[in-house]
Image (tube, rainbow, N blue to C red; front, side, top):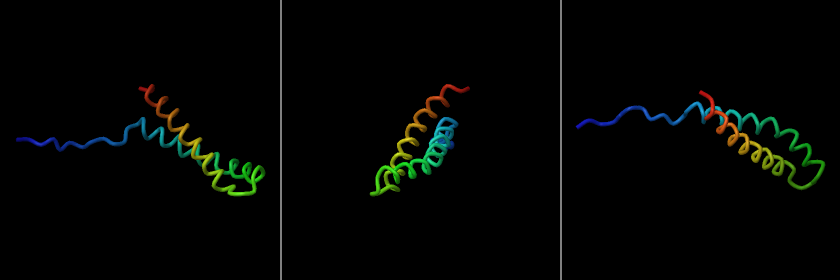
Length: 72
């Protein structure tokens, strides 16, 4: 009886590219989002800015995954 002990690839180029796009989107929008929420609301500007940056990161991950799947 043989076992299938080959390595299981969990990270592909698609996921790696999408994670990089999400991380970049999060950190690039974090500063401007915090400054904007500080001016708009006085309560919880860091939480609101982080949530906005998280939304951008999720969108960037989704777009990055779609784009990376089309590449050879």
